[in-house]
Length: 254
Image 1: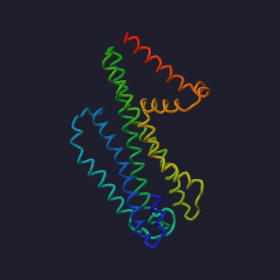
Image 2: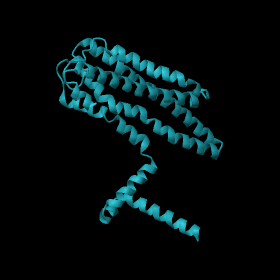
Image 3: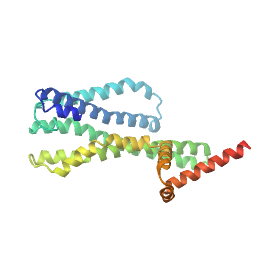
Image 4: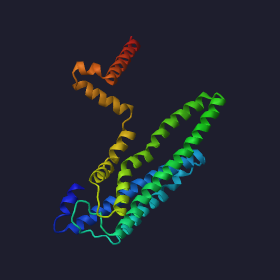
């Protein structure tokens, strides 16, 4: 992206701004919409007790890629891709700003609201199932429900990540629409900064599991001095756990 922005200042800036705007808009909208397909699948499986979600694969692809392409093409109406500057898709005309809000931020916040609604519905269903399992003292069902709730809680990060990544961008666009030509520097900085962190937020929420955390702690434990290691409780717990596992293996071997 940085390379495209640099080249967009050259003689052929119209082409590179065109490529930058279309690719960024298309794939960002697609990423929002894919989260709604996951929400739909969970809601249909857990709340409606349907098992036909695999049949929706082609419909999901048509919905995500078709909607992303439609909003991207609609976004191009009245756009001037050859404008100089850092961000090619930011235009000064009111028509372009309205289209940007409709084709980008409307799908974004629609996805956030839908994900939040389905999270609430699925959470309510799991709570009812937990109470029923506890009432009949069904330990096997309680174990299954606890495992499902653990995975479900991770899914709840989807709307929070979208809000954290795009809240400042939404505020900035609305402010720019209401007050054209009066930019707030710190708000623009937060807009660009947090939007670029969505991938990091996703990796932390879904990739930083117990195995990854243990591998990171082991690598840190290799390089840190002993004095610092003792002052870090997480590393101390890890070493105690490793020693206990080693002791149990020795006992089993004997």
